[in-house]
Length: 160
Image 1 (tube, helix red, strand yellow):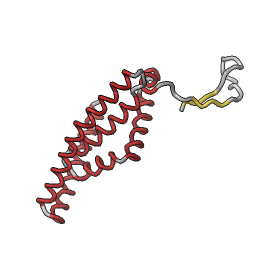
Image 2 (cartoon, rainbow, N blue to C red):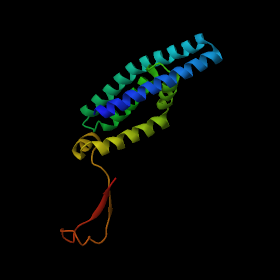
Image 3 (cartoon, helix red, strand yellow):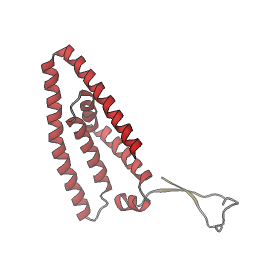
Image 4 (cartoon, one colour):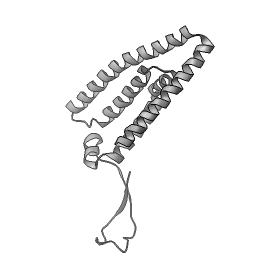
């Protein structure tokens, strides 16, 4: 855990240096005032979106739970929206651009799919079932491996 935290801190420091270099370069191109204005507007937009996405995610989660549906998709899309808003809120042009791109529907859908797949690898099948419902299973009929101790009714399958 300490190693992972150390890597995170190093990555954050490198990102901060890159953001500073980009801001200085942009200030040289368009002026310090305009650069500062862009950074403030991006951060203000991020603050507004943090509040909006947080409330929207909570409402969608509660309505899914109250309707007896699986809340997983709402949780995943809410996390992607909150992540995009957080990227906008953090002062910096690179993170601002990443946050704006994360708000685009195709990118947001791709990030939600990636996040769900990552969660399915890290969480137990029971938790994934509670969040997203039964998983799809791809079944292939074929011969039973010779080292198998099960009966001939065995079906080989791959969990998708």
